[in-house]
Amino acid sequence: MSGHSKWANIKHRKAKQDAKRSKAFTGIIKNITMAARDGGPDPNFNPNLRLAIQNAKGVNMPKDTIEKAIKKGAGGEGANLQNATYEGYATGGIAVFVEATTDNPTRTVANVRAAFNKHNGNLGTNGSLSFIFDQKGIFEINKSAIARFSQDEFELELIEMGAEDIDWEEDMVIVTSAFEDFGKMQKSFEEKNIEVASAKLERIPKSTSTLDTETALKVFKLIEKLEEDDDVTMVYHNLELTEELEKELEKE
Image (tube, rainbow, N blue to C red; front, side):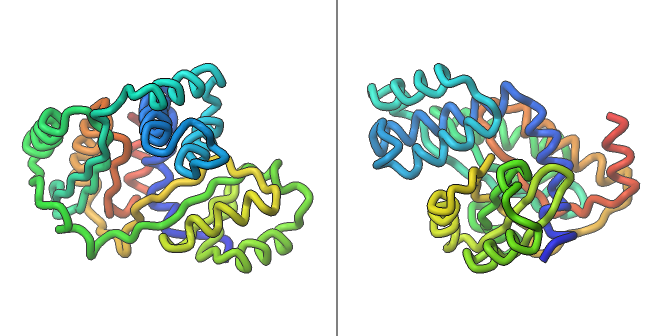
């Protein structure tokens, strides 16, 4: 199960997005606030808050920042925050799925629509891309956290837990699960005392489309514009990252 996976196709996008430390913090702080608001401030009795805190630690968020976000949510702040999704097509018919957390949906949809229009894309209706993306659980585990296992031993553990795919990176193991197995796997990691650096539900394309490099770079201009919006937390697409395209993106 090791080797290439669909994860590899979004690795560049994710690495680039994760490098934007302040943007990553903003999205996670919103998640912590919402989780504490909806389920209470104690992570022992609030699995959504426990997950949000786990992801905060995965990007080395300071403890006092996490605590402030919990207090903010528990105190009733962030009452207007809500999750929103937007779906559309970029140049070349590439599917683009946008996730956002916002206190003003009218503002956010206007910004998202403007980005699509500016870059020759079209914002569609929710549900229009449901046949293109599967929602999967993505777990990132530092290799240092599993030093007690051999690779074969750890893969057997993961298969028993319900892993669909395992991708061994340089210093990280990326594990993919079915959407319905996400909670079960998260609990299994906790029970087996395996520290997970990040656990998220991601939208993985069932198949990808290839464009010429010039057109593909135009698609990435739209993606980058969307990612610049403070309300946008994730942008997914089904564009195939060819070697030539990756080389061009690395120049930017």
